[in-house]
Amino acid sequence: MRALFFAAIACGLLSSWLVDQQWLAAGLLLIWLLRVIRLRDRQCLMVTIGCVLSLAIWLNWQNHRFASIVQQPSQVVTSHLAVQPDAITVRGGQYQLIATSPMGKVLVRGQLKSATEKQYLTQFTHRTIWHVQGEVAAIAPPTNPGQFNAPRYYRSQGIARQVTVTAVQRIEIAPQRGWLVLLDRLHQWRQQFFLACQRLPPTLSRYATSLLVGIRPTDFQTTMGAVQQLGLLHWFSLSGMHVILLVKFLQWVLLRLHLSQQAIDIWLLGLLPAYLVLGGGADSLRRAVVTAALPIIWQLLTHQSSGALGGWSLALIMGIAHNPLVLSQLGGQLSYGLALLLILMPGLPPWRLAIWIQVISLPVLLVATAQWHLWSLAVNLVVAPIFSWVLLPVTVVGASIGFGSTNVTSVCEWVLVNFQNGLEWVSHWPGLLIIGQPSTLWAWTLSLLSLWLLRTPRRRYYWGLLLAYACFSLSLRFPLHGAVQFIDVGQGDSILIRQPFNRQVSLIDTGGQLHFSRPRWQAEQVQPRSRAETITVNYLHRLGITHLDTVYLSHKDVDHIGD
Image (cartoon, rainbow, N blue to C red; front, side):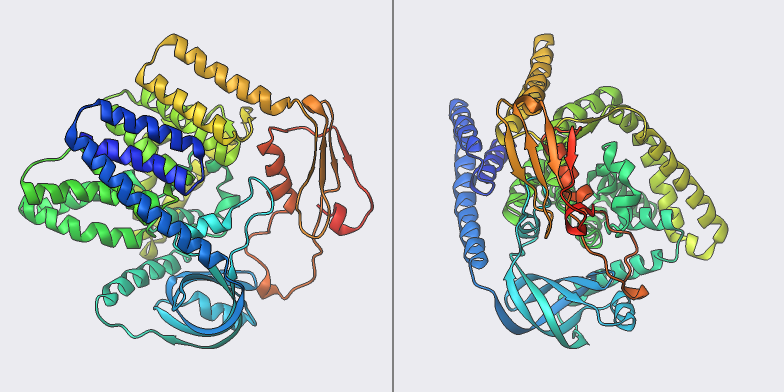
């Protein structure tokens, strides 16, 4: 299993180099390969070189394919799209689909024409075939640093183009044949569960869809802000803990049915892929399912137990082959990184494990959010047992028998609302630090120092890591040179002016959007946030800026000062 581990780390560095264009990863890959050579282990060297060469060919082909697709000019097409019911999202007067077409997997956007059409789309429970006409083009990249990178996100799902629908000719139920019948049924059950949860109280509904089938409602970002601020988002992403609890529960049930261990293993191998589909197939869930299934397969084939490290290594190699960007995304980084930490440091007291989780994940969180809450460590320690023993069981009970019992639903809702209120209360305590977003070099430096500290926990290395964070923060907050930066906020203007060392930080205009009256059915369930909040503030936080000395408003037009 040591050979697989060295091969997995090499593959991770290779993907960061070839896919994410991080040249520092190329140097680290060379160092890692020299380390493998110095082991003088022929099997380890052969496995590592074989995996690296095979994956390099695959990743280069993937890069070339996506680059050629993106460079194709936009064109008007008439096509048919296969759409699963749980791949339809409706917001306000617009809809979005993830569909399979003759062009491959595509993102589909369109405008709703009436309230009846909106109601019609939200009630689909079967796979459908859409015959549409629209414009096919590459997915637009972000226009500001730190903004949501749609092309990268959708590429991780195998999507390179989007279809903007101009006319829907007809929609029909897809015929069911072959092995697709089972897959369609799983997607159907997932969508039916989501629709059923809409009849539950709001908090219970939100927890049930997020924790049980991996669907986050449209109001998740606004109603669960405390979860993200306190660093608890990983608890609400289907991953290892959910799979472990599911496997233990299934083993308990199957043992009570007096099945043999071999029969139990076969049942688990059949149910784990089904749960992967029901849970939405996220990278973190895929990693957990593969890690849980591989030891079972190895046991059935060889009658020998395999270590968790071997399962993790194979899961990483398979995860990169399936999604070359898995280690470029926050979910994949935290899922694989924290799972490896649990494997390499078993038996640690919960408080020490929580500290190491914070130390290892902090550089990753700063790249993604540019902030960290001082109370996140304490809150994670408290939430860990509550989540396993209270929140998840309450959610399961409320989403299973709550439909037929108002009293059960009310009790479950009361528990979850009070927990949510507690998180909101703690999130308003002083302690939210806007640190800034590290550059690629700083992110690698802080991550490697954290890993070195984990390997050699000595006092001088603690101080070295703190000094590195202090240098990074000072270099970001007090730049040697001034800058004039234009923030893309749409039609209007927003210009940031910074003097050297940030002695004076000024903003000219804020941008803004004109709002026109719309029919009530087109109103969104959640009031959209302004671009100043979603774009400008994030842009400033990425630079470590928390205070503006001056804001200049050029004139009173909405597109200049509306936000």
